[in-house]
Image (tube, rainbow, N blue to C red):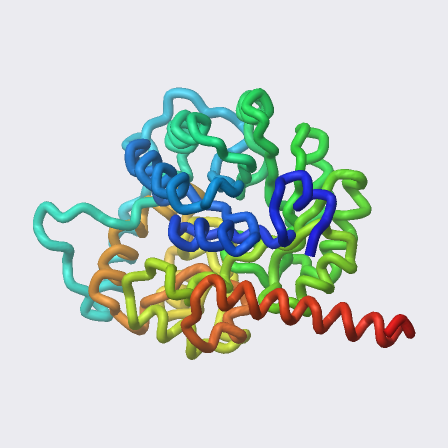
Length: 367
């Protein structure tokens, strides 16, 4: 499963695996793919350094990358406290009413929220990069458009390729104009932030729009056959995220959430602004229903929504309040029916890819 891009990066299979869990990212790399660690949950640089140290020890010298979230335009002099102050009291009251309705306990006195997406703030993402550039990271991906020009230049100075997600050909051309090296064409089916265009339509549009820039297909891919389809559409690899959530190495720390994922079908997700303020595909829950209800106050723009709901999400996760419990995940969740190791998932992907290639060869009369 080699392409020009995977060969350039020195990986056996053109499978790029995004995950917030270091153990999963390292296992993807060891299995012959390219593990990409999501940095958004790291509020402190020392925490990221600790996990990158761990990655160094558990990737057998093979390449890996880092995914951050930062806006293209730099905003000076705005602190987290400044942003918190912009949150209307009406929205704070709605959060508390929703939690009370479902009997969600308070955090213990002095207990900090364990789910804090300060990584949406540019200054936090920049501090993450200050740490990351001390490590042999081979790819820097940004989930929120093209990174600022100085970040792209700094990455290139370190010999790091830069990628960004795109939900349309227009977005992809913007990334190309910004000097990026790779475009991730993320279709409507994908988990997390995603646009309006399905992968089957989006991937070839983006490939054509930015040629000869390499494109990774993302969204709705959880089998080897789907990987083969992405490559057939012109992609030089695939970007997989959701499929790793139910692996043995994942650190969800919630049996209830894992069970919800394993039981969910492909129709049990929804694109909602409930988590971050931008449309993000996630499990449909009573929490997403509450925020999407037109009778409610409506969601706030990023990063206000994420800061608003941070403590609430921590409480829901800690106490495993089933009706409200969810996570970003794509429509591929319908294929996630058992807990397996990353290696077992990888083996299944490669076998499925081989089946697809054999099938196409038979159709083409090359068998």
